[in-house]
Image (cartoon, rainbow, N blue to C red; front, side, top):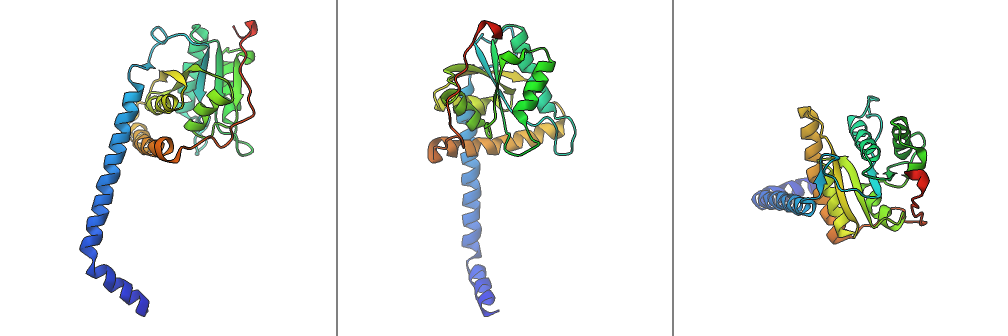
Length: 232
């Protein structure tokens, strides 16, 4: 009890300094996140396309993963939007091959497999799809696209809120990329929650790129994508 009383008295005596320190930390964190957001937007400038008419043709699209179902077991609209966008790119001749990259680290959860099945159901030939089962994070998917699957350039497929961060990572890791943006969800509750989380993700991304220099959890072996007549 004496120790607790001493701690209480110490905190009470220095409460103004503690509050000032917390305020400085909060302001600094907010400034860091805002700066990361600005750098992220600059990296994506003129690289995000919203129609198949305007997006440049490239051999391969990198489709970033998300779960087919929500935690409540309902259809995940993010998943549906991305698959629709990827299928449109293929059917309209803007890409020849789709690299679907996502999480498959536990039994019964297979983002790449679900993406492949959805794309096949949408009329994309299975021979035109490659699965990356170690795309645990956006950074992992993008870096592995280059070092494992041998891509020098690609079209990234995700929703518009996610595309700037993906393009920022690609720029910093030497992958020549543009993005084809699936429409963002319009429901306000989804938009606010997802975009708030994305702001924090951009701050963490800055740490990964410039301070921690993070690498993918798994980086090999190499599996270069070879385009053949069967993928057309």
